Amino acid sequence: MNPIDISSIVLISITLFAATVNGALGYGFSSITVPVALIFYTNRILNPALVLIEVVVNIYVLLINRESIPAVWRRVYPILIGLAPGVLIGSYLLSSIHPGWIKFFTYLFILPLILIQAAGIRRPLQSERALGIPFGTGIGFLYSVTTVSGPPLAVLFNNQGFVKKEFRAALGIIRVAESGLTAMAYYYLGLYSIESKAILSTIIPSVIIGIPVGAFLIRQMDAETFRRICMSFDVWVVGFGLSRVLIDLHLIGHPYAYSVMLSALLVDGYLLYHFFTKRKPIEMQPEAPEITPAAMPSVQSISPMERKWNRKE
Image 1 (tube, rainbow, N blue to C red):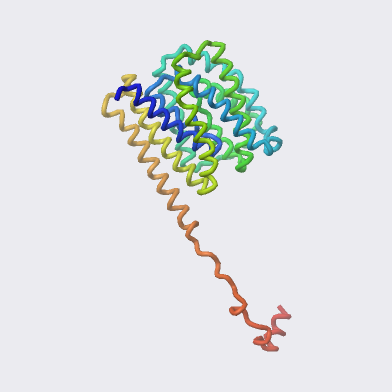
Image 2 (cartoon, rainbow, N blue to C red; image 1 turned 90 degrees about the vertical axis):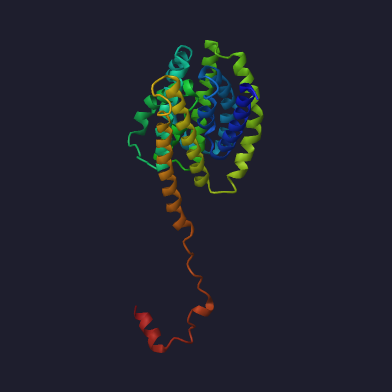
């Protein structure tokens, strides 16, 4: 089997899995797809295809959570204001920076964010509105360069106490805006190529199948457990991708570069063990015994003295 066939099979498989995760959680398509796909493609070829897919996916997520838009609109509009300059700067750099270095910074940025989420670290921010515009600029830059913005957005919204429907609505608003702006910027810069169109046609069936499957699966299992397993997969893939790009850029020689992947696996293994051991006692906690009429003393069985004492209390 030639390398082109292998890359296509891997791309179809990973986008099907990523679309399933996105259908279940409302995000995760790019953060799962990008680390694996970058092994075979550069950001310059991969990003335009993913952005067009995400425009449609994000509109779908926003539509099914539209009832929560009024509750989150005021909290997210500062982020929307900051998106445009970040998208313009990032799109321009994507067309001019060496692809290997973009891969390196993509992996380097994503890995700690995933581990932060896996550790369950939450630090609510007091000045949410003041942070909105600079945070939006950073998100716009990161998304236009890597098509990944789910992990930092998830960290922010989890920290700020967004409930499930509000979380998905806020995520949908921002990601519709960032993917739409980035798609237009890519078109203006002429980044849509024949290779990008080929990738797009390859992954469309995976998205059509995966999104509804994920929406179905999330009703059958615990959402937090599903999310945690997906994060572990992210850690494994990003760790491998970072090790590979360190070798490609001649920053660390083979096999020492794989110590980065091993370190990420060890940290995630510890966090995964802590997650499941912490949840197990809660899930296995016995329910309070049901009090049946037979177990309750009847009125007749209580002596007059006891009734008098109870009235005093």
